[in-house]
Image (cartoon, rainbow, N blue to C red; front, top):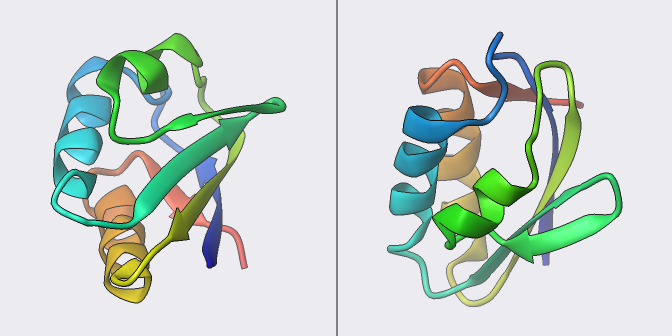
Length: 91
């Protein structure tokens, strides 16, 4: 199991276009990928689920990845958060 603790840096939070790109990118992985915000955990492969969390700027989220390709998924998600300028890993 891999976990990513991140902070949302986008001024509009994790909404619409950026969330769609992130969700579409994680769908290629066989691993189960979930996102947790304020005690709610949802499937990160569901755009409706991610959007329903209403994640604002400066929110802390945890992404959990479990499965055979979890390391590759983790690396790509961290890169996507930074590339799409929507978040960064908290180390």
